[in-house]
Length: 273
Image 1: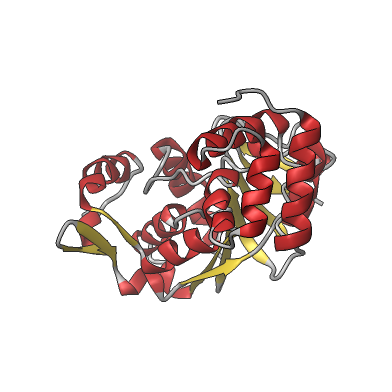
Image 2: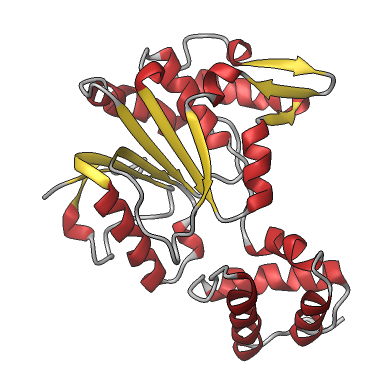
């Protein structure tokens, strides 16, 4: 099996994906894309991207499976507990001053981040006045997120994460077991709207008090990172909060002057005018 693919081959495949399916990966980071496309070649038993492109064109079932490789679907409940602890201590008291709240989880994957925020806000007495918008470009991931069903054997680690994040209730209060699965509580789901949205092509849709987009920008090139940060800036209300992943920063972006660090270590920023 061939193990080398060129930038020209990648560009051709991504252009076909954009023209045919209207998913735009053309400004995603090249190194990460190449690694994931090599994995896709192995999965589909193709010797070249041209062969994969032909397969995708001829078989409508191929693209949804290819999309699983082009998008990154890795998450946990209360992933990076230190972030959620900082959010609870430093941001929630300020969010509590708003009469109603709107939060945007951009790149929500299969929903764990959105449910984590809902649980945290429920514990702090804010969920009843909150609407969480959780968006992603992967329809299959969104369907999984809406169902809110996770493997029961993951809940032990999720429970440890929740405790380390300052949780002061039992995580089991927010799900029920069904066979070998954990189903998130309806009281959480009713405050979350899952929707399709692309940071590469779509515009803002609401004013929000907080944007959480963690471990997504690392897969974008600099131009697309700036586009996404522009969307977040324009979505946030005055003095609203932006949360990024630990390997992400606004520091070298076109919007560096528009955000002040609230927690440098946990990459929590506040919009400044």
